[in-house]
Amino acid sequence: MGEAIVSTFPSITGEELETRMWLPEGEPRAVVQLVHGMAEHIARYDAAARRLNEAGFLVVGHTHLGHGQAAELLGWFAQEHGWDALVEDVHTLRKNTQAAYPSLPYFLLGHSMGSFITRAYIQRFESGLRGVILSGTGHFEPLILNAGLAIANLQCLFGMEKKPSKLLESISFAGYNKEFEPVRTSHDWLSKDHEIVDQYLADPYCGYPFTAGGYRDFFQGLKGLSPKNLAGMDKEVPILLFSGASDPVGGRGAGVKITADELLAAGVRDVRVKLYENGRHEMLNEIQRDEVLDDLVTWLEQHLQA
Image 1 (cartoon, rainbow, N blue to C red):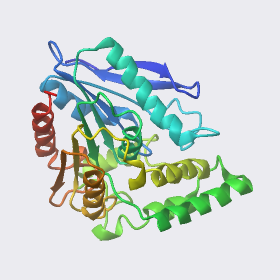
Image 2 (image 1 turned 90 degrees about the horizontal axis):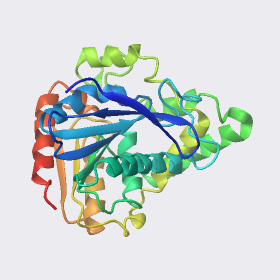
Image 3 (image 1 turned 135 degrees about the horizontal axis):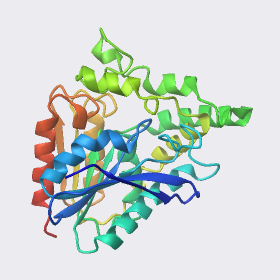
């Protein structure tokens, strides 16, 4: 196992997106495609990818539109259909990877915003996946989403489409740290590991506010995760949801369980939920991440066979 192989591929919008591939020693057993979260980038998953490499898994992922060093504008996806572009880009990378490794079982792992992109993805492109993993996902009531979308649309109407929206950032994230007071930083809700939080805060490509247009696309995407849109999913593809039991994005586990119940109600036959005691939002970067990654490898191995 060496350094990640860095390359690019064209987004559906025409922008070049950074891709990283981590290869295991010897022949890979399967592929795990990572879909990262809001206001971060794929390089943050290096340690998790290397642990999966040790278990024989090839790992690949890309940095989304509006993210990372190559972004045209941080927190901005596209002039139109930005959320759809995120989903389509995940599919492009999957197709590219499967063309190179056509015989390998294929898993998709999305974290936080990436879990919501993944949930949108499996409504359309789930066929052929061996399994889906949702990390740090959650549930949002339509009333809240409609309110956020209304504010975002209003700001866009007044020319703020490509400007950072401090108001929507405050509305979306202000309450997350309150559960952990007294707090050391503005992002203690991410992890109990101080080094991880400090690295995040020091990274210029992490933690920035989204534009009003980015929030508009995000809220529209979340609205599309309604249970009424789950009927077309492949009910035979197993789904693992894991989260910190103290993660505010997942409603301290309640939102994760609601999501699992919606998947079961839609007919998905194999849905598992794992909540980690005292864990916060980034379980792949939490103090107990070794346990989390061991559990993830075990689940992947259990689902290698169709």
